[in-house]
Every structure is written in C-alpha cells, then in structure tokens.
Image (cartoon, rainbow, N blue to C red):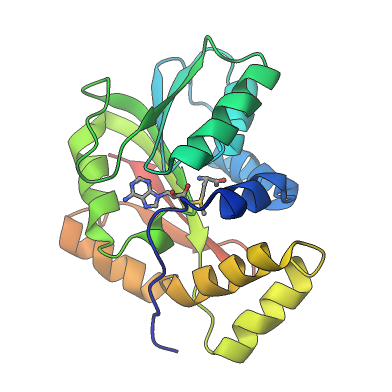
Length: 220
Ligand SMILES: C[S@@+](CC[C@H](N)C(=O)[O-])C[C@H]1O[C@@H](n2cnc3c(N)ncnc32)[C@H](O)[C@@H]1O
C-alpha cells in the first residue's frame, strides 16, 4: 500500500488524552528490554535525548532502567507535553527528565551533544523522514548510542484494520483512528534502509521485532 502521511503533531487535546490513557506497556516495555539486550555493557550516565517524546512514558521507563542519566524530551505538541509533565511529577523524576517544546528540525536543544538518542513512534509522523536522521547526526556525540523504534506499514488497509482490531479494540475510537492512520503513514523496513543510506547512516542496523514494529540501532 502507498504511504498516506498523517499530521505531524498530535496537538488535539482529546487525541493527547486518549494517547496518554492507552495501554502501551507491551511495546514500551519491549523498547526498554530490546535496548538492554542490544547494549548490555553500556554505562548510561550522560545526557539522553528522546525525540518526539509525547507524554514521556518512554523517558520515564528509560530513567527508571538507567538511574544515572538525564533525559531531555522534545515534542512540538503542547498538550502532549502537559501530560508528560504530569507523568514525570507523578514518577518523581523532575530532577532527571526535562521536557522541551520544539518542532523538528527547527527545535533548539539545550545540549550540543547527547550520549544516547532515543525515539519511539516519531518517524512515521514526519512528512520528511530525513528530519529524524539529520537531527541524530546534528546531536549525537561520537559513539553515541542510537535506538529508534517505529511502526511498520502493512501491505494493505485491510491488514492495518486487522492490527487495530488485534491491539486497540479496547481503546477509545479516537485512538483506534490514530493507530490506523499511523500504520498507513509508517515506513517499510526497505524504505528505512534507503533513508539510512541517503543519510550516510548505513552503519545502523534495522530489525523487525513484532508484527508491527521495527527498530533501528547502532553507534554513531
Ligand atoms: C505517536 S507519538 C509518540 C510519543 C512517544 N514517543 C511515545 O512513544 O509514547 C508521536 C509524537 O511525535 C510528535 N511529533 C511529530 N512530529 C514532530 C516534529 N516535527 N517535531 C516535534 N515533535 C513531533 C507528536 O506531537 C507526538 O507527540
């Protein structure tokens, strides 16, 4: 199926609320588990950047898994950041996670370089995917760990609908709609390999890790 882009920012309050209330424990838990499996010896102590952080669930999980790092999360949607600030306060991690409003690629980040760059489910929102890869090149310190997870576009709208029915049928309709649109907006692993080639990041590896997710990982 052809890619059908969706709006970049999730700046509708109802959408942000539905997203924040959804149960992402399985994919977000898998994000942390996979990171740990791939970088078992990494001493994560420095500054971590979470691109398109949304309501900060990934940042919170990462901060708990690696208690000696500091995380900057950036997102362009105010209503997502409001939910993120609430979650960080509840998790008592205000001293280690800072959220910033910024729309990539124009966002100005507080550190010049980061030791770890993470992103979950941002790539499929970007109308121009090179924005993610260029941002990584701009902000990664030499040898930085890069770990990206995103949705994979299925072969057809019917398959996208089937994934929605399998994984989001208990969620509000707005979330089911967004999940469907995100699957249709996502990239295939082959397209991502081409993006990495164009960006000069072919050292990164890509792996399919579920019926709807791939990861891209490596050291810069
Ligand atoms: C599907 S959400 C993922 C949120 C979070 N990473 C997570 O895994 O829960 C995608 C997020 O990327 C943000 N986003 C999309 N395009 C962006 C851009 N160009 N600059 C900054 N944030 C962007 C959206 O506002 C939204 O909060």
